[in-house]
Amino acid sequence: MAIQDESLSGRLRQETLLARGRVYRFGKPTPLELLPIAGPGPEIWVKREDVSPIKAYKWRGACNRMAVLTPAESARGVVTASAGNHAQGVAVAAKTLGIRARIYMPRSTPRVKQTAVMTHGGEFVEIRLAGDSYDEAVAAAKLDQAASGAVYVHAYDDLKVMAGQGTLADEVVLSGQGPFDAVYLQIGGGGMAAGVSHWLKTYWPEIVCIGVEGVGQASMKAALSAGQPVTLENVDLFCDGTAVKRAGDLPFAVCQETLDRIETVTNAEVSHAIRTLWEGLRCISEPSGAMGLAAVLKHRAQLIGKRVLVVLCGANIDFLQLGLIAQSEGASSLKSRTIRVQISEREGSMLGLLDACFAGLNIADFQYGKTHGDQAWPVFTISADEPSLLEALPTKLDAHGYRWEDLTGAIDVAFRAIPQRGDLLSQPLFLRLDFYERPGALHVFLDQRLRGCASMCYFNYRQSGERIGRALIGLDFSTPAKRASFLESLPSHGEGYRLCEVLDAETSARLVG
Image 1: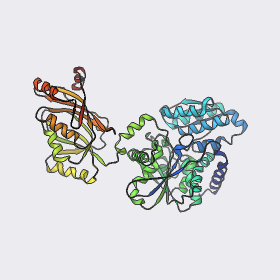
Image 2: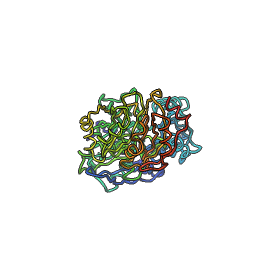
Image 3: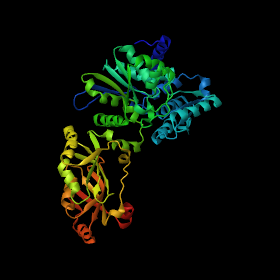
Image 4: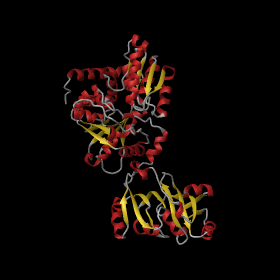
């Protein structure tokens, strides 16, 4: 597939060859590893840019561009804008070459990336936070360039930057593991996708090159549809490294010829890919770094028997984001769904529901607060080792006469907005409990400890990935005597659970509202 602008194609090819002699002054080649996955699927090879000098591929383009600055340009210094990884590449080059660099980053840039920039660049770099998006940081950096005369080093819309990124494809070609049937390349501004797809098509003309973008940040898809780069009004920031509103002009010119198609992935699919990389290679990817794999896993059935290449393009993730990803629906290795079921507000009704319909299912999340005197609407997020058990749940609920609705993805469930009416409670008691993560632990507690003595008025439980699940439970008793008797007879450890705390009156009052 030839690029229509043969001058651009030839220059990019020549610059990639020249980049071979420049980039390895700043870093070493990265490995190519086979990703083991359970069950049928393609043979997946991962280019491990997460083990590069900056834990991302961006050092290649930034260093290649800055290595050719003239003495006069170097004296003026450089300015750039980056969501994080390009900034680190510029920092590495600045310190190695002794060039001053001002780096504009969005105010929302993860702290880990800001710290890494200063670590790599030391006294040669200055970070300036500007705007809430990459594009706003670019605007601020451009104003600096115009005022100071510094050289602007673009994160992707530059021939030498694209060529530098292409060296990772050169390493793949020289690895001896190819050719591959397909390559899945994540796209932000398009520099990496352009440089890599161009180089792979040069040596393996039959390879299928697929660009991958987030559903809420598909700027290259929009550009290809319009026939030219266009600016998106908003972009989703979950995959912050690819959150670019407008594809670069030069990358677009290359990608419209070298990419066979564009695919989009959801944040949940990216989270699942991050987990797959951890389980298979024990590596942690930032969200943007797992987008290519997310597209492969999305279509794994159609790719059975194929050899595919993905680029783990970065591992610069904020530590706090790891927890959110791990607890997300997409990160689960099991299929799940969230349902709300209507039951009567009386003792034993919750246990009856679990007995009748939830056998063999895993309760990953349980939210309930008493809001009505006669009816209750507990919300469960459930999964199963056997997908057929999950699929059979609606039929079971219908057969037993339960009214229910699917709340998968509901915003109030995601934010754990659990309402409760204190005026409906008589003698409430709140407990903090740990349940051992094994089938039946919750059921045993309800059956052995609550049957006939109390009704449930509040339940807040979510699996955490530990060997225990932490829960806050509210019980309501008809008389103070029954409440006191329950407390006296409740052991600190029991079958499937351990009691952590009986909440004091002040805390309980806040929960009752």
